[in-house]
Length: 387
Ligand SMILES: *Cc1c(COP(=O)(O)O)cnc(C)c1O
Image (cartoon, rainbow, N blue to C red):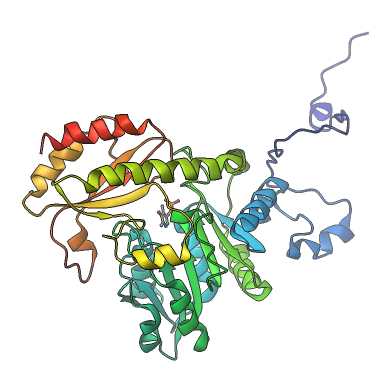
């Protein structure tokens, strides 16, 4: 007997896959609509504390699992994902700042964090001030009655100064001010931000957590339930969300992150050490090297280094020459972001980025990928010969 095609049956299909499937991968749950068993469940507010589900925007088992794993890497308790590292920076600002407040940021802050802060200050009556990255406990003198949030980066973007986070946190906490750390460089592995006093930790998962140069994502992590609630309030008001497919990609990369990080660290130091011996290079701005401002603090507080560092070319070389160096690289590609298997080189006009940059010479930042280091060094050598 033929059975007519039923559109309804296609949608309300009764097949249930057998229970008991077990595998290492975290299931990818796609959902806008999340189903409730009954009206009472719909009306209950259990989902407010992440013990139940209400709507895809609020989270799925996939995103909750990634959040839990990231909190545990960082030694925190609570985590929320954002659609980029920049989104995570914004989530922190939205959670802890309101009109009339003041915020302090290091002068070497990640460029888009400066852009975000200047945008907040131009449009939302929030004042933003930039402090010298090595200020340490001297930050106390900059704290005003309306200062609510201090950002710090460990170490700073591009110029790599290592700040004294414990000193900044002690000064801030003495005046009731929160400190948020952009801990992306250490991936939460080489610097334990909470143990050094951070209230809020931010990660650009786009970097080592993804490791693939193909995903944008960020995270905000806290230990304190009151701070987590403030983040939750702004998170649920603003509509941030990440795709479960992207969350899966990061979940898949996390187990190898420590091994990759250590490989990037070893390769980075080897290439940096080689550059240190070259007469074309005046300074190696790598926290593990004595040339780098804050190197002593890195030795005290960090247990490793990322594969991301910068160099200053000797002032006798023009920007035209150092641009030619970058253009001559073959294995090193030109592009933003970092943390993937491919090595990258980017020249920065550092004088224009900073209020007070005293150093001479062009700056080039390297992301050391996972290629054989002798090939990377040979590539740099042939490009130096074209200077
Ligand atoms: C890349 C980066 C970010 C922003 O991450 P995106 O995902 O690219 O928005 C923030 N902070 C630091 C230190 C970064 O390197």
